[in-house]
Amino acid sequence: MIRVQDDSGWITIGDAEDRPALAFQRVEDYRPPQWPGQEVPQQVHLDVRVKDLDEAERQVLETGATSLKRGTDAFRVYLDPAGHPFCLVQW
Image 1 (cartoon, rainbow, N blue to C red):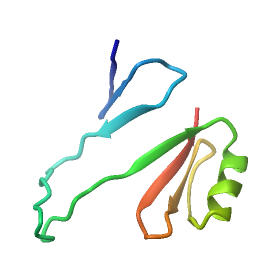
Image 2: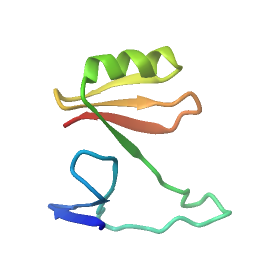
Image 3: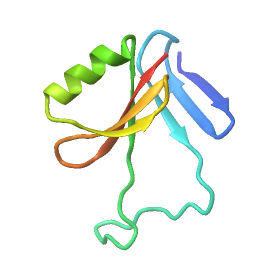
Image 4: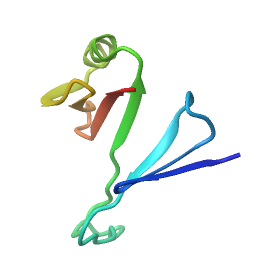
C-alpha cells in the first residue's frame, strides 16, 4: 500500500513510517524544466532521513560531500562531489 501524506506544501509518498519515502515540495511560480535545454534546468533535491545526524554527517563528509553550513537541529545541507545539493534530516 502506498502512503500519501500532504502537509503544508509537502507531499510524501512511501509505504511505511519507518521506511524511505519520497517527498515533493510545492513552489510558487513553478517553471517546469526544459530538456535538453538548460534555460530552466532540471531540478532535484534529495532529503535523506537518518537516525543520528552527527554520525551521518561524518559519513557523508568522509565520502566527499561538502557542508554548506546551513540547517537546523533537525537537518543539514550538503553538496555531493558533483555539486548537487542534498539534506540529511533527523526524524
